[in-house]
Image (cartoon, rainbow, N blue to C red; front, side, top):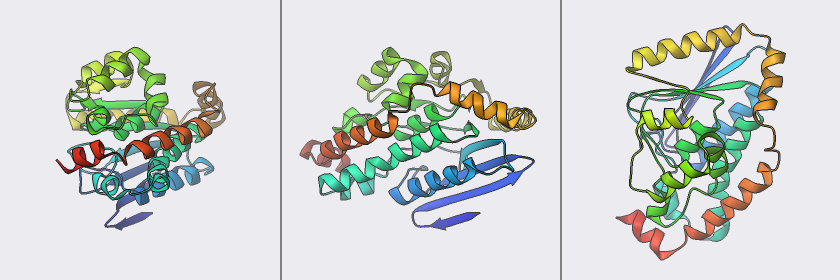
Length: 252
């Protein structure tokens, strides 16, 4: 299935029990709300597909993996309801990844910022290249990584999360992300990345799908309250994005 328009692209291919879901947007694979909703719905749909065992989540091109939220849409937010609704898109996506019955492998070919880091953290297993530096820049524009924090902290711990959040202008190298547990493996090139993703997903696709589904439940124990928590966090971001500080920072 392929959906494509000014709000980005979403392509799903299924082969040998592996579903590959690719999202894309001209602005460094950032997410307008429509694309967030499409990806959320697609993962929810694939969760109940008995013909697949594993999902590979990737982004378009050879540049950035994901630049997070669409700055154009952030600038357009004018009410608390609009802001909360926008950030709820990331909340819904993370919860869809969390509750998906399939193991989700993240293929990370380049840099990730903000919500992109949250998506990586929500994946059950992420494989990256040395180009896959990460940054949480939200404080620099007057908001904070409130919605994605539970997912990121779950992977790298509160201390590393605080380090990233407060050093909002600082890129963390892929090797740092690997050391902290965000990436399971870091490869030299994109060719090696693709080889590893294919090999690993193929191995998983031959495992008992019921065992994989039960294992996923174990991975995410203690997160059932995230449906409520992430919506509350979205409201915090939705309020802060209305501030003059944030509006001015986004324009610069």
